[in-house]
Length: 314
Image (cartoon, rainbow, N blue to C red; front, side, top):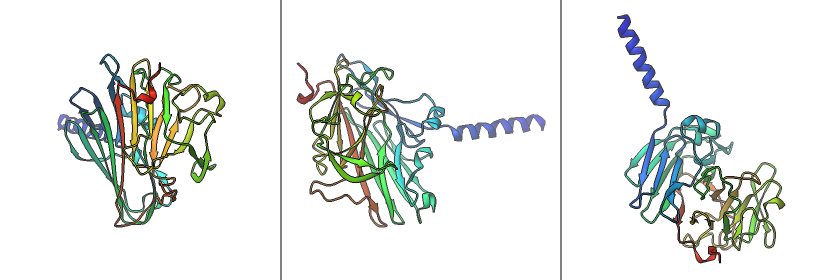
């Protein structure tokens, strides 16, 4: 009996350890490009893309195990602020698998009644798809049983060089924006638009990220009001690494693109679409979600080693 008790205790401990482990889903397209998605925070933990001579290398920051994400919870995660507290909590939750195949995975999370002060429940589904066109598509669908403000984006941090310890300052950035949306002291967007032409924040012509970064307070951490907010056929931004030959074009259904280099000497950059700002008619976006409504957002990160004409250097 004593031995049986030891065996059962060990088995139960194994179950607990397994329940705390994250499940990962490997997506591979027809060209060998690979993405790995975790159910912990519905996050992208790994993504590879080809360089100019066909070698696959990592292009996003990530950790080898869950422990890293416990300390850096936003990295790669699905980030959703909601409820009366307008807090982000779902990056620390284990999401439910809805469906998966070789190139796509859908994860869902339904909040508890009253979470974040929401007088109801939020039902969130996010789908990652790795297409044969070398594009990573992220699709969000959200419903609620109670009125709530909603902010949805991702915590992915890119470095197109293939070396996550290499500086991004030589990588070129283009953004389809003449205006930025100002933050208040609480890091909330105010809706006050500022002209950025001929300032260090102007990327309407491709520039090296490091070209004017020393003129900023602490690198780039700005919310850009896109010029074509209602048109997903128009690129929101392009990032290009001349050494590896990789270019990444960002398409989004959202009117705002938040750019963050995490300081002046960064090894990573986030490009985060946000449902905030103004539409093409300069009407302010309403980010309130009501019962019976469905929020639908989409982001596409398209990779190529044939950079768009605007990025080609002589």
